[in-house]
Length: 118
Image (cartoon, rainbow, N blue to C red):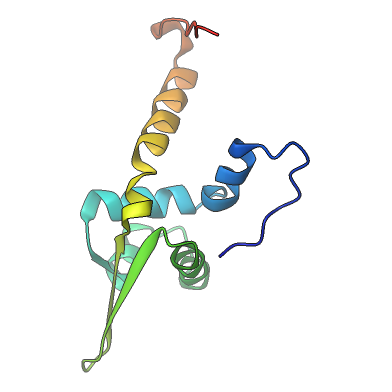
């Protein structure tokens, strides 16, 4: 489990970003969600801009945080597959909301103003 970051306000958003923040984790999670169970090699091919070392590191952290499940098969050659855990699946609405927000920022004139009720 990831070590808690200094969070003076005990902010849930900061805590969430500690788990999924960074350049690659959201992309890895979305790719695994979209494809389903996926082998390391196929994931690496689908994400050509990430080095295999960084991809391995990101997958390891996501696994430690229980957001993905790593299946290792003792075959020749060895095979490893990744899939979202039940906890990881709870992030899909969060990632979808981030996607929608990003699309609104891309073209703010085409989107209605959000008016939350407080």
